[in-house]
Image (cartoon, rainbow, N blue to C red; front, side, top):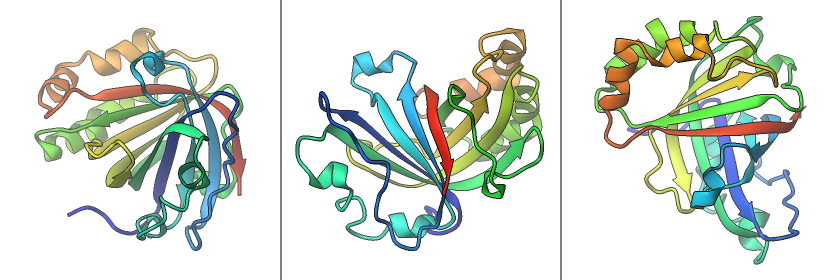
Length: 218
C-alpha cells in the first residue's frame, strides 16, 4: 500500500518553454513546506527529454499534495505556454542521515552550487534493498569527500508523464567540490552487494544530478 501521510519531499520538475519563468511558490494549504530548493540539471539527460529544471519541497505533510486537484492547480500546469512538461513526484521520508546530525527542519540549508543526486530504483526484493542501503551503502556514501546528507524516500504518488515512477528514491547532497566519481564513491557502488541490487531490479535504476541554484528555509 502506498503511503498517504507523513513528512517527505515533493519534486516539481519541468522543461520550461523558452523565456518562461516558473514561480517556486505553489498553493498547497496545510502542507507545511520547510525548505524550497531550486534545481538545474547538470547530467545531460535533458537531451533525452528529461526535465531540465525544477524545485524540491521538503514538507511536513505529503497528504496535502495527494488531494484531488492539487496538481491541476499548479500555475505551471494551469497556465498554458509556461512548460513543455510538468511532473510531480510525492515521496514519504523513510530515513535521513547528515554529517552533523542536523535535520533540514532545524534551519540548515544547502549552499548555491551544491550538488543533489537523486537515484530512483524499483527493486525486485524490497527487503534486501532496504537492508543493503541501511547496512552497507549509506555508511560508504558518507565517506565520499564533500558529502553533506542523504535521505531515502518511498513513492506516494506521481503526476504528469511519470506514471511509472520508481517506488524508492535516494537523495544525496554534496558540496560543490566533492568526490563524486572518485575512489570512495566507486567503492560504494562496486561492492558485490551493490552490484546484486542493481541487477535485481524490475527496470534499471534512474540517476539524476542537479545543481542547487538556491535553497531557502520557509
